[in-house]
Amino acid sequence: MDTDALAERIRALADANPGFDKRVVFDLGGEGVIRLDAATRPPAVSREAGEADATITVTAENLAKLVEGDMDPTLAYMTGKLKVDGSMGIAIQLGELLGG
Image (cartoon, rainbow, N blue to C red; front, side, top):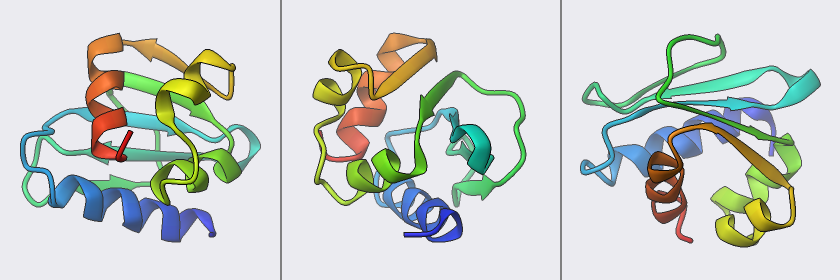
């Protein structure tokens, strides 16, 4: 899944879960960023970093596994496949959004 498809999938998940109203930046390393702004309705995504309640550092490959339900978010965190900078509470809510 390319990063544009990932961004759209994340936007759709946030749109389907109106209780999640945070701003999250997914830092994909050399593949750029995806910024989700779910504080707006409909949620917006962009490929530019900006203000965020939490930053998740993860490879694009592992993010694709997370959004497809092929990787558990908690396990990914515990094994170092993703890192959280910012509110752990938001990261937990994000894990629920992703189906974890």
